[in-house]
Image (tube, rainbow, N blue to C red):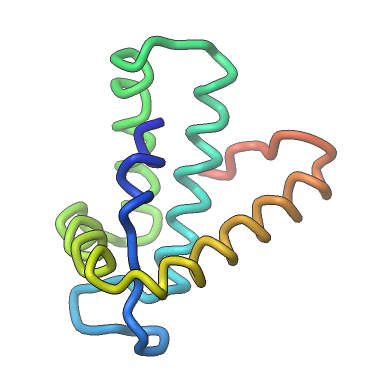
Length: 116
């Protein structure tokens, strides 16, 4: 949905946790992506139109970024940076997918949204 289209282009550099100043580390981005996917999964349960889902997701996205102390421009810069570094995307997605699968197994279904 919303995040999937943005995140589908995310790509990571070959550097370790902090690729460069103003770009989220692999760990930071993984955590944020997990939150976005969890929120998106929740919205998908309501069979909303794209416009309605977008309106509901925007404040959720803001709350996730606030929780992690990330400005939206930093997220956009991170996306752009990783668009140019495709091999690292696989690493991030492996972690996200494994983590979400494990979380779902532990919860016995769709995980609860952990935003406070």
